[in-house]
Amino acid sequence: MTPLNHYIQAIMGQASPAVLIQQSHEREREAVPEGTIETRTSHYAFADGVQLQEEREDFYPTTNAPIDEASCPPCTLDYRVTQHGQQTVYPASKRFHNECQRLFWVAVFHLPT
Figure 1 (cartoon, rainbow, N blue to C red):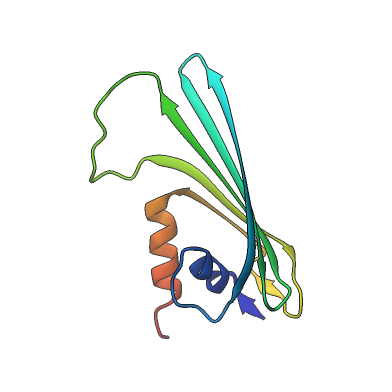
Figure 2 (figure 1 turned 90 degrees about the vertical axis):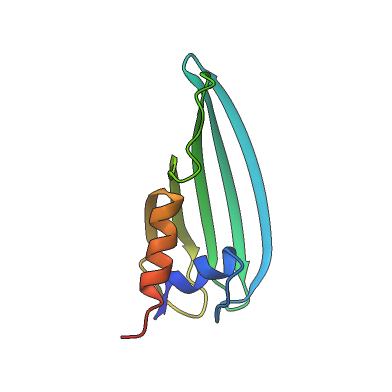
């Protein structure tokens, strides 16, 4: 079994035993009364046959309120294994509610036991 963390690290450009060999990206925008919702769907293929889908949804309000650089704006990040390849990946899916949560999970999961 291989941890999902290895594949997310490779997607983020960090050192990882997972080798990213192919990727594709799609983007959709939807205007709503309160602002714009942007959804980006990415598909990743790895050398060991694992395939992963990442879906990120961001909301951009129509107000011009200043953004606090120290804050972690909300977004939804979903990772889902679509093909396990040569190994079983665990967990097979993971959801984060902002970038800070994802970065923390990657860092903690990588700590030695």
